[in-house]
Image (tube, rainbow, N blue to C red; front, side, top):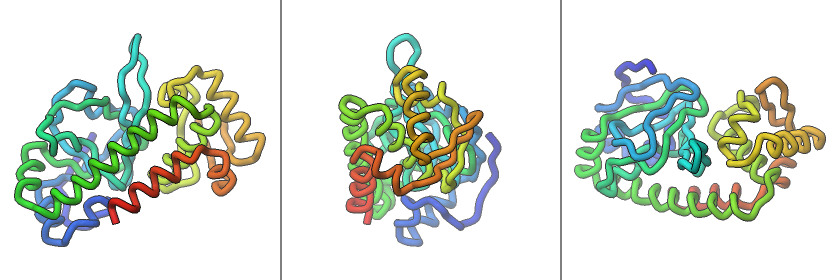
Length: 236
């Protein structure tokens, strides 16, 4: 992880929604860092030392399960932040934060973030709304994992990743996908092969390319559009 102090340009939708003065006050104590793929930012149960605002990267929120396994319950890109529980007065992370898409992010120490949060009513309102969105999306993900088939869940995950990667092509392995979706590797292989036969994606040697986004949206469960609608409605 490398870092350097930044000026003002911003490419995080959550921060872009703030009034200019409030945004610049927060950015004054941020630094731009380069996140590395598969880098753990903190473990579940670990103290939150920094808040992260992705600007060209994305981060998985993974809840631990039995025998060292885990399940992805959230995916944060340039629409959000990692470390939201700090505004509840809780400085312990409920999830593992794992870099899934490498790239730049803004980072601010937790204590400075809390100072800015207390001083800015606009920031408090924006983050309270984002916390509500996060809670809704966590609930949706829990239901999705319980009732929807692997192919639909994979399609949803690919669309969510494309939205945050801002690219049709990204690197991912079947093993990592199985870990993220909480299913056996053979289940991911079957689902990915089905999507490839339908010419919705192309997959080879850990590289996935989305070929037909519109048709992929028709295959995925309704949770994808529901998540987007919640964000757009609450964060407008």
